[in-house]
Image (cartoon, rainbow, N blue to C red; front, side, top):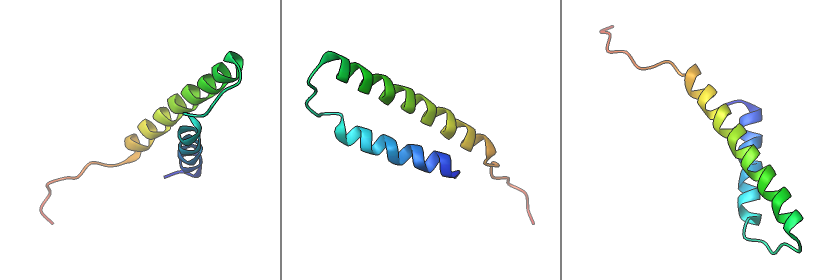
Length: 62
């Protein structure tokens, strides 16, 4: 896995742990949600790209 993928996964874990936090204003909550869902979409794109680099198993006899 790429370092970018691992870093983003760690960031999303930290976001997830803060997700139930107490927000003082709608703007704070909106900004948090926006960054959370944007980073989740980026993580999805990186994981899909990672799967595309994996070569499938073959049933060849060696």
